[in-house]
Image (cartoon, rainbow, N blue to C red; front, side, top):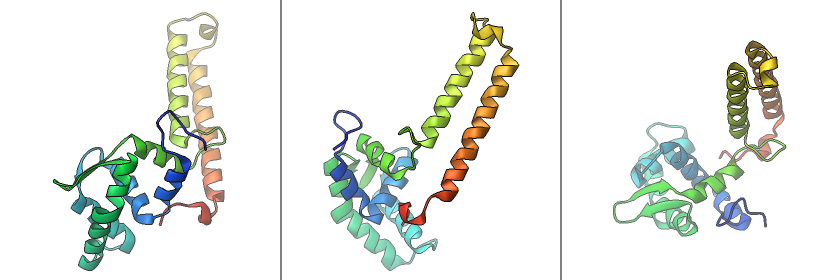
Length: 177
């Protein structure tokens, strides 16, 4: 079993979490919410996702709410993926959600997500252009506009590769319900 960091979830636990579409959708919603949300809000978002209707039918919302409250959120809480307060019926993502999220995201051949690759390119570009402007030896020998042009060309190349690979991704590999 490969672990991303000390204390990370085991692969078996991650695969168990991802085996259920409601848990996948719950984690996706919680990772984008940015904080605490109520179980009702979460169940409405999942029911809308499942049915494609907004608002989702009441029976679907109630079914999602019950399964989240009784089964999915306690399981995710025990694994450290979410923090679930049964008293206030509020929930938020924890550090384990990031471990699971890595398995929900398409990664590059180097083990990075595309977002991480773009972020790294941005930081490197910023540092190189700043070094050129501050006349750091060797780097300053090249005009900052050339460095910027090279960076933009690299971003364009990576974007083309990203789009090309995304277009070739088989539907069966998709984790969306």
